[in-house]
Length: 266
Image (cartoon, helix red, strand yellow):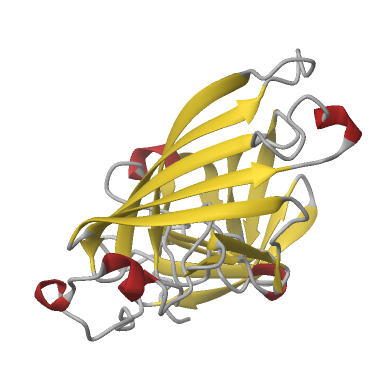
């Protein structure tokens, strides 16, 4: 019976017809969900996806309320509830079948489950033994590791991550293959402090569409500042200027600023 407890009444010991599970752990090809089930509601206490990494729990204290649902039924055969599906933009009926130990959405199986008595996060792996006080060249430190890109799991589809070098500055890898691009790149790396550095990259493109720029003016200029907030974490600010595609006959740019975070790959 595992972690499923049938609650007995105070009089006579007759069982109540509902299910409680401390850690209903359900998996499919895209990831894993861990739920706590009570008489009246189901709450996701852990969500893992292959896209963001199976060691990164997407549920935290600030968003637990968003992944809690009221049960419409709950008896010895299973329970049901309604949840919004953002892909199909509609509510679906989710049913847990106790005997099959599976979750179904609108009648289609979505997860195979296990009933467990408890849930605990896997211990975090130590990504580097280096201490912040020992880092005096942040770019050199960053260049020793692979770093997450856009919040994706580093092992997604063969490998998705960023690396740092004097040749490329920041080099993005997708599906396990580095993506340096075909444009000529000029890189300048500047140490700002013991915990901060900047990479300025200019990209030149001789394609006909950029004839006004030729090989003299860059079609993209990026200045990205990296701040080490921990030996395995950086915060970044990207200021990027791109050729104005609405008017390529003259040298003109559009600008934008982006902020992001990255960490050493697991």
